[in-house]
Length: 220
Image (cartoon, rainbow, N blue to C red; front, side, top):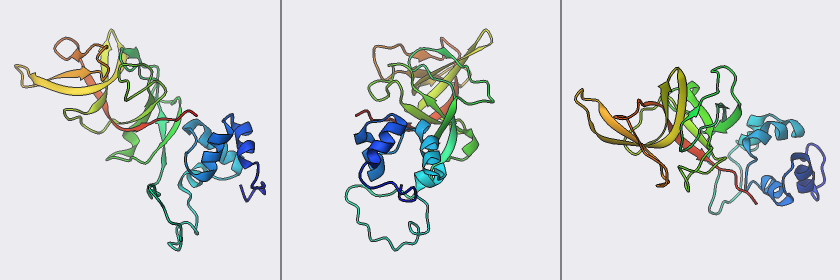
């Protein structure tokens, strides 16, 4: 905000009013103790007259010169570059749900440091349900790699096609045996024991992708 000539005092108030957050939350942005939710990053970058990449990565000649004398306590910059990925339709975490994403227009954009083998196969989904609670709550964002194969214990997004309709769910991947054709019998297991487990002997299951990151916005 130096380039915009905002005085040091009152900067948090300016940001809180502009973006509908608390003064404390805006103060954490300024101190580098928190980053804005993904939907606010492009707006904040536009407000400050910088790119989203610059805002997230802090890229500048001074920052990359290696001459910084800043000392870190129990946290330090990761050095990883954040990149933009599409946010697809909501995942009903716990019950099957129709996918409304048309394959062309994502619901929005998110950011991740994850790349994987094929960065174009990486996307984000938003949790909607309690079957993976308490580890995953409604509103949490997960990053999914559709090019990654699951192993026992992986968290996966899976799909069932029934009557021409694609349905998705988010669960833990478990292998419980092998059928007469030598194909793994799998279960999709909720982390919340109050929700049902799905078995590939009872329902046709295909894996969409493996969950590789979990993002949560803290509420203050």
